[in-house]
Length: 297
Ligand SMILES: O=C1C[C@@H](O)[C@H](O)[C@@H](O)C1=O
Ligand SMILES: [Co+2]
Image 1 (tube, rainbow, N blue to C red):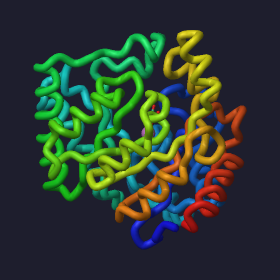
Image 2 (cartoon, helix red, strand yellow):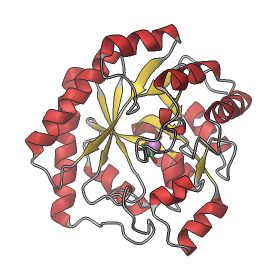
Image 3 (tube, rainbow, N blue to C red):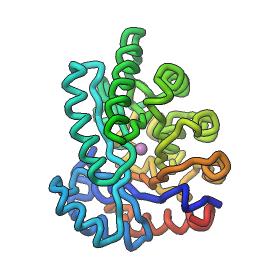
Image 4 (cartoon, rainbow, N blue to C red):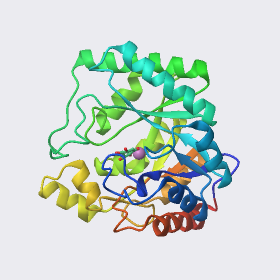
């Protein structure tokens, strides 16, 4: 059982409109997306690319449906852009989130990322050298400090096809960053896709985790992705991910850890797949029912 005073439940718009592949869900409007989130019983959302930039319009649309913003993805380029340039863009996003009432920002280093490229996801990933490790972790500590001064916590999203993907990379990353300034954004789907036990990662780092993405994985699709050398996005298009309870990830030990180790924050269903194949409202409801059944949330 999860305590609703500690754990809040959200859903990401990526099941309706996919910012990585804008043709997926181009027929779905922002209003439809947030209305269906509310209809399925969710009260939190992350920012999507189709959300209005005007905060007044955004706030009104969300409050009409009883939804609050809990996070936004931020692509950092600390390895390939001057620090000042990254920080400026980051601070704008942090201020925006603060004004929207969010508590965290989800950062992912996108220098050399192959997540949007037509490269086999299991073969073409970039591996950082010593200097780059230092540049990345120093840069994130600085961003984390700047965010903290504004009242937002920096969480880092490990991700397939990026410089922080493997178990060794996650461990080295967590050993290298300042635990007061940089926290983990745990994503059950990306752990599983990378061949890492999500339970093992969460067990180690739950005390340093401030945001959670719940994604399930279809292992038969992953097998094809490996054999046929698919890119990350080709995998998504073909159903690598789905909502919790619909794939092969065992969520019960994940929910147990969230409940027993005092996690406070959002758990967000984030399950990108083709909305023309997986009806977003139907899948949001499926996720909502599964989470209710397993956690009481
Ligand atoms: O948090 C995420 C944001 C998406 O843009 C990304 O590709 C997805 O897989 C994810 O985990
Ligand atoms: Co995620």
